[in-house]
Length: 257
Image 1 (cartoon, helix red, strand yellow):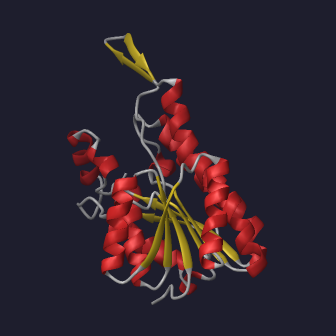
Image 2 (cartoon, rainbow, N blue to C red):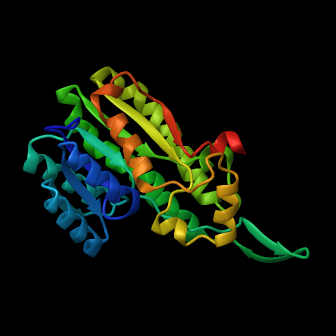
């Protein structure tokens, strides 16, 4: 019960890593606020949380919409009086090469709408949610903010200009906020997953996934629970002196490149 009496907001909490995190946090005693756009999946998570005796509520929230985020943050505080943990987990993919060419002939380019969509959710969403939630943590002089980045932000990845740019930006914001909010007892850290078995990675070509597994010293793809465990540690009292860190949970992929 490492999160007993804590209130945790988990963005993208209806599926994949977010779902695993919601279930784990509830088992550790937290009241869980799930922010997502996947209404049906969210109801399934709520049912699973109820079955295990957890406390949770769902908010339909677009994390890139500042007004919706501010409203949801206020409603979480009205429901549970405070918020202790923010897990900025929501993210999307819109992969594509900057310029795709074959035999010297240009066949396509990364489109503005695909670049902008990823930046809106994966970068702006982290900014908007943190800006909305931090003011509720500051007066209590405590809080945990954990941002989802990616190992690709550390080494780059073919065909992911937008995703890599957003996730690298998250690392930068994490380090700024660790400095700005640390004086209020709030820690800000990031988790950099490797390739994890989720709906997003299942959309990737099989040959790319196979190549990534080959580059991972542990020789397997990660599971959502692997990341949920990292989120849990950084959200717990045990991580009280960890601030501004980027924790790679990638089976050794970065050292294996």
